[in-house]
Amino acid sequence: MLALRTVLGRCLAGPVRGGAAVLGSARGGGGPEFPSQLDVLPPTMLKKDYANVSVINSVDDVVKRLLSLEMASQREKMKIKTQQLVEKVRRSPNDNGSFEVQVAILTAKIRSYEEHLQIHPKDKNNRRRMLMAMDHRRKLLAYLRRVRYDVFENTCKQLNIQYTLPPPYCRRITKRLLVKKAFCLKVFQEVQKLKAPERLKQRKEWQARARAAREAQAQCEGTPV
Image 1: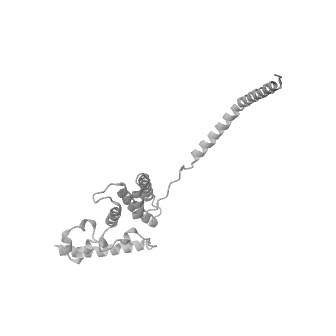
Image 2: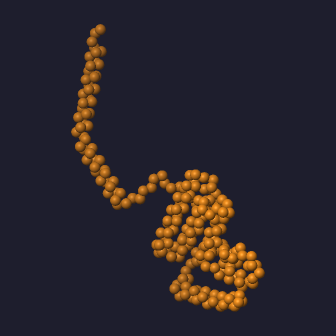
Image 3: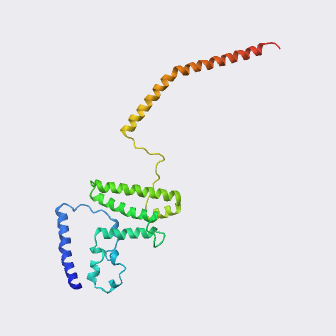
């Protein structure tokens, strides 16, 4: 039964993969190939679900090939790549939710989105998801940098992340902001015009008091004792 499944799998794998290649060439998909983070995975590595199975060493080479990354989908390869990044920064074997693990998972997603957008630059939905993941990762890294700087440095080093400090104040300039700023400036100028007569009056009173004080002081100095 296992041999029959193996033969059927080999027969089905050939035409489908070849048909996909023909379809891709017919659609004009023979453009430049961009490097992927999944290229470093060896094709002989077993899938994640079959890596720890004890019976896997007793099967033949055809079954191993079917269960390896050579026949795996993109999602299965992404699971293994994410697991490799998580293993670099996790605190313990049971650590699945710390800030470092979350940063590693988001890093794998962001790099996958970047590779997809290089081939499909007009995919706005995935671009939006990538920007949301980048914003989430930036917040996690900012927290690690503020609370545990040594963990922050190790995470950036292990995951090859170049962290850039945000500006001290960043506000997007919009039309509404410009109109509001111009309106506030105009209101300030009008208020200054209304207060000008009162300020001029106060200035004249201060000058009169200062002049009277100087005259009184000069009169006191000229009076004989």
